Image (cartoon, rainbow, N blue to C red; front, side):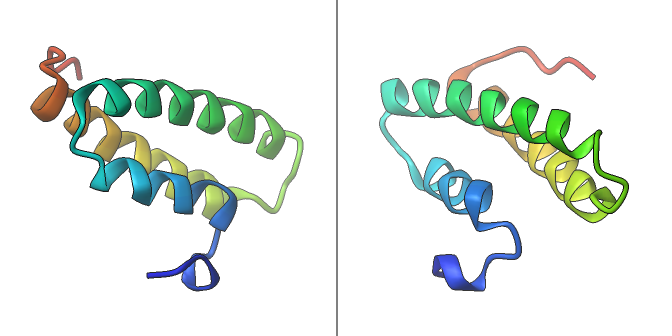
Length: 79
């Protein structure tokens, strides 16, 4: 999937790269970067009434990110 196929390419493209990363050190850095991107974007969307679809997509991505952190980086599974 290339960037033109993403609905929200500004964060979905780097998130896809994170999912494909196999180097643990790079994966750790990318998860931190993605968490910051998600936080910034959610703050922007909170000021916008029309962003519910993107918010839902970010929350889904955060669930996947939690699984990546648990399974690939050894983080505890906090729900």
